[in-house]
Length: 217
Image 1 (cartoon, rainbow, N blue to C red):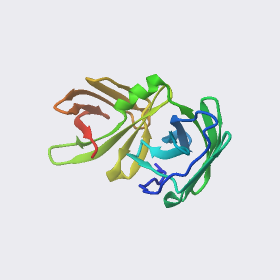
Image 2 (cartoon, rainbow, N blue to C red):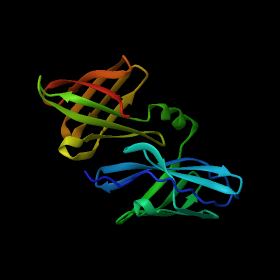
Image 3 (spheres, rainbow, N blue to C red):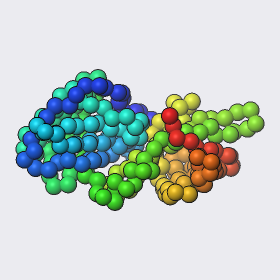
Image 4 (cartoon, helix red, strand yellow):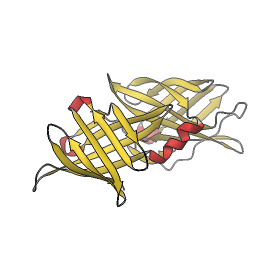
C-alpha cells in the first residue's frame, strides 16, 4: 500500500486571523486508492498574533510536523510543508475544513473538528507493534495504527517485512482491557487482553497464531 511521505520538521508555523475560532483538532481521511486511506490531522491553537498549526499523520507516526508557511484569511486556510513537498488549500465551513492536499498529486479531503467525546478517544491513539509467531523459528513483524477521527477510529495494519502498508481494518474496538479488530482484505482478525503493559492475544489468518502488541517507540 502506498504511504504518504510525512517526516519531521522543526520549522515554525506562521500566523493567521483570529476573527473566528478555528482552534481545535481537525481530522479527515486522505484517500490514496479506492478503499485505502490514512488520517490527516491539523491542530490549530491560538497564539498572541494569530494561530499556530501542526500537521499530523497518526496512522504513520505520533510526532507533529510544523509547516514552513501558513496563511489564514477569513475562512481560507493555506499551508505548505517544504520538507514534505506538500501543501494544503481549503476553507472552513462550520465544523468542517474542506480542501485539497497536494503531495505529488492533488487529493481532496474534508477534515472535521473533533468533539469532546472524540478527544477522549485520543488516549487510545497509538501505534502498536509486535512479532507474529509463525512457528518456533519464524516471525513476521506487524504494526497496528490506531488514529482518531470524528465519530470513531480509522485503523490500518502494516506488514513492513512484506512492504505492505495501510491495510484497512474494517472492525475495531478497544477498551482499557480488550482490543479486537478484523481486516477483510487479508481475512484476518485479532483478540487481545491488556496484560503486563501490552496486548496479549491471538491473530487468526487461516490458523490461530500468538501475537503480543506493545507501544511502538
